[in-house]
Image (cartoon, rainbow, N blue to C red; front, side, top):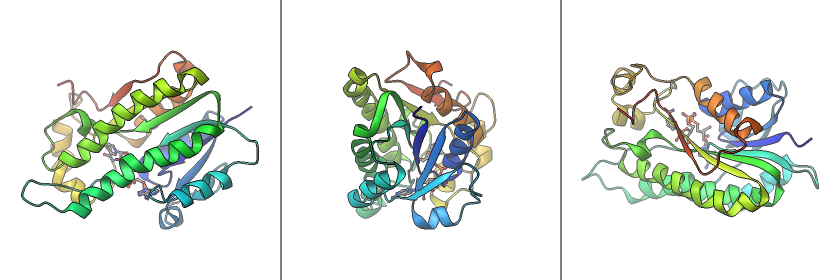
Length: 240
Ligand SMILES: NC(=O)c1ccc[n+]([C@@H]2O[C@H](COP(=O)([O-])OP(=O)(O)OC[C@H]3O[C@@H](n4cnc5c(N)ncnc54)[C@H](O)[C@@H]3O)[C@@H](O)[C@H]2O)c1
């Protein structure tokens, strides 16, 4: 049975939670991430393979996919979770900072997906990790990050159409603010945990495991008639 799933950004906070959740369901996740990120995780090797990957470098992506799979082996799924946030306030234009967000969040996702697509089994599933900022306007400073994440929702829909003839489903999980160490950019944009919690109907931020649960569901056959969708895992933030 094909049960291998590549998880880009698999050494990150949400990526690790996804890998752990997939192991519980009998998948064989391969955490694919930058070498420094892989080195700094607490992965203890229990059922978890890792591979070095830089989504901004096509040669690295091809090498990682080649390393993750045996010749002729097919994938049950792909989780595109690698992503970066840089704040972008009006009047503080920094072209390089904005370009790198597109390079990782959008072009990087396309690079990985294009490379992986021929190795996906019939009936496989892709989950792209977007963000509530792609669907929301209340996190000032997240304009360009939010644009990349809105782009992921569009990318998901088009990709779903292209892969549907092979029985491959593609969905987008868009998390709200999730408990994780906040970078200076994230703290600036979100205003911190308390301010973020106040945006959610449930009046709290989310846990990485709550995102992982949605990803596992969408990867699985339990979601067999769901494709081209965005599922917000945001405690009722966007709807409010
Ligand atoms: N934490 C949140 O509140 C939140 C909310 C909404 C969406 N997201 C999205 O969820 C995903 C995971 O975020 P996280 O909170 O776990 O952050 P994180 O920084 O812990 O994880 C992101 C991972 O992506 C990896 N990455 C960055 N650039 C890469 C590259 N060039 N090649 C390969 N890997 C690269 C990083 O090394 C890191 O391990 C991201 O796409 C993020 O935009 C996070």
